[in-house]
Length: 511
Image (cartoon, rainbow, N blue to C red):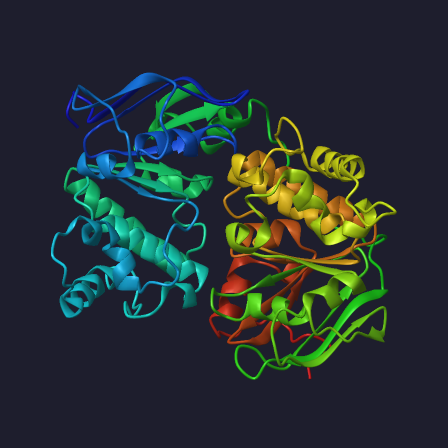
């Protein structure tokens, strides 16, 4: 590595009104280095990267590239300086094709009135094929979240970057896709490109990165060589305290109940899943595992009335439910937390209070049919405090919160209707270690209060550490059920990939 950093950030400060997002933050990036940037949600990581990418402007401090001060007034200026950003939140045009999205920046700079679409698609396909076999002629809005994330990465790879920022790039990717991305990052590093890598996944950081910088509460904490620290060291610096137990204790034998809250029989949509049957007991956390694309999300949407033409039976406490729409599900006491926080989890332009109350407007409506702002604020304050949402007040727009705090608001919105069953799709995706622990503890508390909880997760340690039982989905059907000592990463992977496992068993109620 050259002695002169390719990038130096000195004393960067940024306020959003009274909120201090960054205070005097320093950061350096060497040529050909993969440098991890860690911190809890709200620590200022994304704010700092948005300043570097020209999306935001700092209130104080300076940015130097190759020792020369730069004013990065816009994303186009950042790109002209060789700085690229792969956003944590998908930032694509859903109505444009994959090819058009990949070369959006180049297209906006071109001066010709005519577009050679054949060449555009050929060049885009060559870039896309490095990551995944996605047809670049497809409309981006028709792709799954994981595929959209790969398009985001492909778009960044077309830029002539010397500094490339990855903000939680693997949150929606499979293990195979993650391995391909890591290979590309190592290839970029070998060609002298410098990488800033933001992730909450310690295994990724310690296998990929050279150094790690930690931010906490918008302030610089430390920078160290990866070889000189452990994952526990990094976590302690991030949260300023010990995380003694990431996962709470599971159900004891005495807590197990034979009372079935939710019963699903022969559920299918004639397209993505079929013949799905299982029971969810009172106070149980049931995990649903499987490869991305296996049908896990579609099954949850089918239970909640979010998919059309679903056959089968959904019962609560033994009573069949006529669930045709999500409103029917909410009325019955079943709620669903989408994996797509930005698109479906929260209303970014509405306040925290409005988001939390939106599914339970009856509770905050006055006698004249108008929203009682005081009641709405009190409801939101109670749930925001319970979930530890970092905020100044409940009238702040949700868009002003960090990704992790937005996720907490999305969960609070579901809890506000006092549900009997909660289905959570990737509930801790993109959330830091401290917040993950808090959400895991919250889910166990909810289960112990008698609520039935279903957790869909691509993180095998989360399924094993949090859940009392795991159903594994393969190609839209239940491949097997794991309980107690049967639960292991190997067992889940074998079932998900179609391999037999001696300890796996079929669900008792599979038809």
